[in-house]
Structure formats: structure tokens, C-alpha cells
Image 1 (spheres, rainbow, N blue to C red):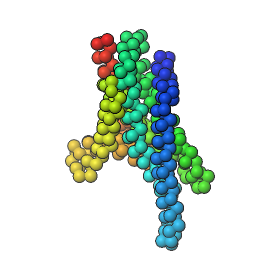
Image 2 (tube, helix red, strand yellow):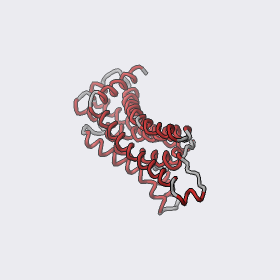
Image 3 (tube, rainbow, N blue to C red):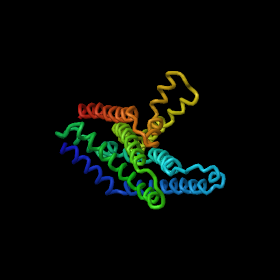
Image 4 (spheres, rainbow, N blue to C red):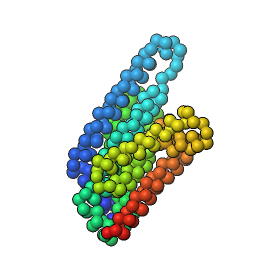
Length: 255
């Protein structure tokens, strides 16, 4: 466990010692700020609509602002996650330090989990920036805070599973560009698999749709924790880290 935390701190220091972390934070804050502003503007416009006021329909802040914004945040993750994971192992291979890790007394599990955990902590730190915008809702409105926490849990789990896949892809090449592009392609594929359910109603189509990361985040965005969604994300995390460990074993054997 000690070695794992040493690896984790080393990776985090590498992120914040370079412009990577700050650039990703600035990118996320800019895009999230726009999504939040657009959602609030639509909410205000609809709430002051005479037709809506005549019908006496209550406007739910969580339904009109929080939920669509959180769904859009998961889209931003498609671009941020490849930038986080592309350097994890690819940079080590390019610089030649991967051989030192492979022949060191540190176990493969400690190396993999340490690097993956650093990526998850960075992704979580980026998500924390969005709480500044959401705090405005509590100043001028009364949204429910429990669904918001559940949505953040879903974002973290979704990001963690995609980061695990990105960790494996980064371990398969020494080129960071290839690692980033490969991670983006796989993440995008897992994102659009849900579209199959729109035109394929067979058992096979449902199985393909079930593998989509978006279909499992919808309940979290609504403030609902479903065990099936948690198991799905946990299984994908395990699968990604398992593939990475197999790749590390082959590298250690060659070293």
C-alpha cells in the first residue's frame, strides 16, 4: 500500500508540475460554465413564460438545470480523460523508465493502481471546480442536494472506468498521441453503443446497449443509485485494470 501511494503522489506531482492539470481545469471550467449558464438561462426563460405560469406547473431546478448540466459534464469527460491517461505509461516507455519499474521490487498491482488512482484524483479535482457554479443555485434557489451528490458519484464512477481503460491503452504504446487517440476512440464507442437500442430491439441489441456508459449514468443523473449501474462501472474498472496487469506481466517478463 505504501508503494502504491508513492506512485500515486509521483503521478499527481507530475500532473501539477506541468501545464497539463491547469490546462484541463481551465478547459473544463470554461465549457462547464457555458453549459451551466445556458441551462440557467433556459430555466429562467421557461419559468417566466406566461403559458407555464397559467398552467401552474412548478419548475424543478434539479430537473431543468442540474440534470442536463450533469449529462453534459459526462460529454466533457470524453475529451478530458484521454488527456489524463495518455501519459501514464506511454511517457514511461518513451523515456525508458518503464524498465526500472518493471524490474523494481514494486508489484505490478501497486504500479497500476497507483497510476490509475492518481488519474482518478485528478479527474475528481477537476469535477470539484463545477461546485462553484452549482453553489449559485443554493444562493438563489432551493435545489435538492442529495440528487446532486448522487450525480457526482455517477460522474466519478463513469470517469474511473474510462480512466481504467485509458490506463490499459497507454500501457500498450510509447506514443502519447496514439494512446490519447485510442482512448478517445474506445470511450466514444462505449458512449454511442446506447444508440443501438433505438433501432435494434433483439436480445443482442439490448446487450450492446447495456454496455454503453451513458445508459448507466442516466439513473445517477436523476439522483437514483441502482446496484446494476454500480456493478457495471465496477466491472469495467476491474476489466481495464486486469488488462493492464496482463500487459505489465508481459513487459516484466521481457525485461
